[in-house]
Length: 345
Image 1 (tube, rainbow, N blue to C red):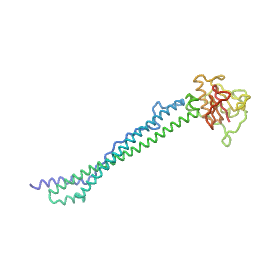
Image 2 (cartoon, one colour):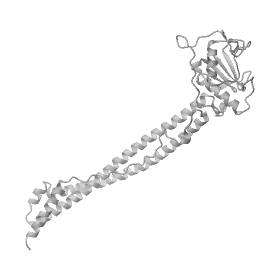
Image 3 (spheres, rainbow, N blue to C red):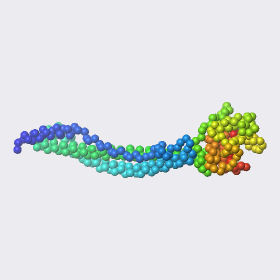
Image 4 (tube, rainbow, N blue to C red):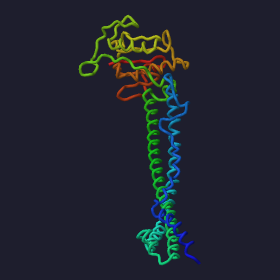
């Protein structure tokens, strides 16, 4: 057998072997990104949005829907976290199982010629030895590249899964916070206007802002005399009461109202109180949703603007509200089911 064909084969293999030594290991494959199913605390369907004339019931329903959505997202995130934890353990086990193989291949390469392809091949005793070493070197490098690629992929998968788990934990924390905010906002809005038992939900979610009443130099409300003509009777009221009267009218509450009243205790004789009826003339107990809604919205306007207007307390439908203590049961001479009473400082 002549040597020439073997030399031709050796010359053909030499570039392949050199390239296999010089080529970098295969790039690690990217893991498929996580699903990331999580509801944003601010997202909601079109049915969840409320307009400027929305009732408190609309807002509470929207808050409840968002609460349920966030809670479902938390549950889904918890399930995803459990799956990711299993995936991480599987990926880490795969990574650990590959390490001995990669180390063994590296050791074999070192034993067969770690000084480099050129010196390893030039040390061949014959053309047959050269060919055998060239093929062995190529097989070792191919195997090592494949195993290194598998190892890099396993490491990348572990890191990707851990990043996905961190993202799920963050989403869960965001949704838990959203749940708390929605619940707190609904509770606060409802408590401010006396709760569901007082309003039955028939109240606007928002009220216009009243222009602030004048204050004294230290920012408080000084006592005022009854020295301004009462536009509702022939008596007198304070300047602060007149300011409140104008602001309530400006907000659209134009049904019958009476402020000054002679005789008796409390604020009416002092010109510091008004009774706002639910109808255009006189007083009548609320016997339909229009009257109840009117009273609820008027009460809500007064309570929401109490600090701006210098309000002392509000009475409506057997309940009394003080800025310092909120709503309490009221059992005075009138149950105030036919008008909203407001007293000023």
